[in-house]
Each structure stands twice: as C-alpha cells, then as structure tokens.
Image 1 (cartoon, rainbow, N blue to C red):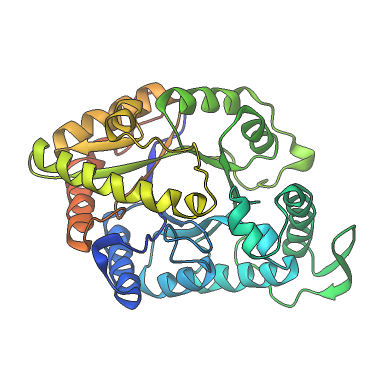
Image 2: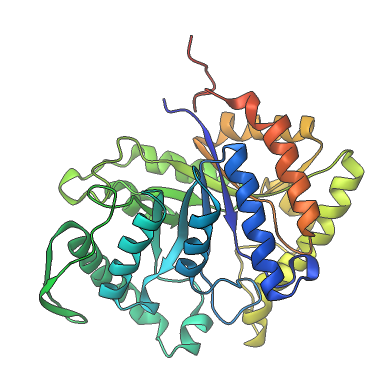
Length: 351
C-alpha cells in the first residue's frame, strides 16, 4: 500500500474574501507559499470560463507565477480543458512550465463539463469527446518525440520539430477527474492519477472501480508512475471551536454554491454535482469542518473508508477571507497533517 498524501485544490472564486482581482491573485500566491513550506504535495488549479467560479481561465499563467513563489510543492492544472486549446501550443506550454517549475509539473486533462462555457467559445458540447481523444494523441506524441507527425480528423502536423522538451522523462504525469464508473475505468486503464468529488459513498465506489480495473501497459499514459494516486476533493474550514467553524463553512458554502450555479442559472438550469443544502453536504462528507481535533478524526475516517491515498483540500472558497483560509491551512499543517506522516492507505504505519 502507498503512503497517504495531501494536496490543495483551487477554483479561485471571484468573491473569495471580496478582494479585487490583482489582490486575489496575490493572496492566493501567498497561500501557495505557505502550503509549500508546510509540505503539501501538490497545488491543483481548475480551469473555468465565463463564470465567477474560476478567475484563472489560463492555468498556465497562474502556475508560471506559482513556480517563482514555491520550491518543493508540485503544481498543476486540474484540469486543462483540451477543447479550448490548439494541442501543439499546449505541448509547448507544458514543456515551458515543466522547466520553469524545475520538473514539478502535473498535467490534468479533460473535455469540460459545462456546455455553456464551451458554447461561449462556439465549441459544441457534443463534439468535445472526439476533440479530447485526438488532442490527447497529439499531446502524448509531442511530449514523447523530437518531431511531431499526426494526421487525424481534427489536427494535422507534418514533421514538426519539437524544440522544447519537458524536464521530466518522458513527461509530467497525467491526471483525470472522475465522476462515473466509466470515466474511472478509462483513467485506470491508462494509468492516470485521479481525483473525484461527491459524496463519500460515490468516492468509495469509484476508488474500488479504479483498483479493480486492469492497467493497459501498451496504452499507459504514465509509464513512469509506479502507483498512480487515487484522490478526492473536500472543502475544509478549521477554527478554534466547532461553532465558529460551522458558521464560517455554512456562509462560505452558500456563496460557493451560488458561484458554481451562476452560469447554469443564466441558462435556466442547474448542475447537479453540488447540493444546495449545507447540512446535506456535510453529512455526505464533501465538507470537513471543525477544530483540528475533529478534522483529524474526519481525515482518518476518509482514509479508512474511501479507498483513496490522496486527499485534496480546498482552503480558499466561497466568501472566506484570505486570513480565514490561511488560518485553516496553518491549523491543518500543524495540528492534523503531521499525524498522518508515513501512514499507508490501508491505515497501517511502517514498522
């Protein structure tokens, strides 16, 4: 069994703390510096467009800045939305970032779940699976070869010299967001690291599907990753007492939910990935809220029951101020995370 580890996930919501955009970026880079010093394994940033949920529509730009403010923590998009990219250009960005980070880059990939974000860019949602599949072919070829040749339905390249090479060999590891049995089996066959969201029961089922699915070494996207990480996302608030933590989290969840639904509501619908009910979210396990002691219990239960070996936490979300997010991170780093050092995903510790 592998050791458990902790990462950070970030949407960079517009209303987090009410900061202006340049202040929001500076606050978040400061949070990354603190996470780097605390020993978090990786910082993952989402990509969203035309929505207050995501103020980092270009993950590469944010990660380039983060590369200059951190030293040990790995950095990556979770995920790059491939239909928004010309794949050859993305290959070049990946190579640049891998070198700028000193070989700390992680690369999440996906096709996008919002037809409205895609629609604003005139990308039909029903075409995105084909775009994703062929773009991945191009990206892998471009990262693994000194020249790129590809002839497909959507992209065509003829002996393009790949002058930029990634620092990691053969390239940074690939990640995938999983939400169903099919997406989980797809990622498992290709040896991708995965992160899921949703209730504890769903996370447990998906991690079991991942572990049970055979890895196709002939098609492996991460041949250099011996044991891919299987993780889940949880929003977190830690305070000195339970009542304060609960009130902060309840208020933040309302703002987060509204941000997540904003673009969908513009088109008179909602996305069902999130419940509007804070108490339901807490009961389902998608939130970790409380004092360091109670959060320690929640984290232990997560690893004991989920089948995951990676916990990805969102500290800055909803209307939490930068100071409140930092307080939660510091409390977790000092009062929770050290207790899991060396812990294996089966709950045991090395003798």
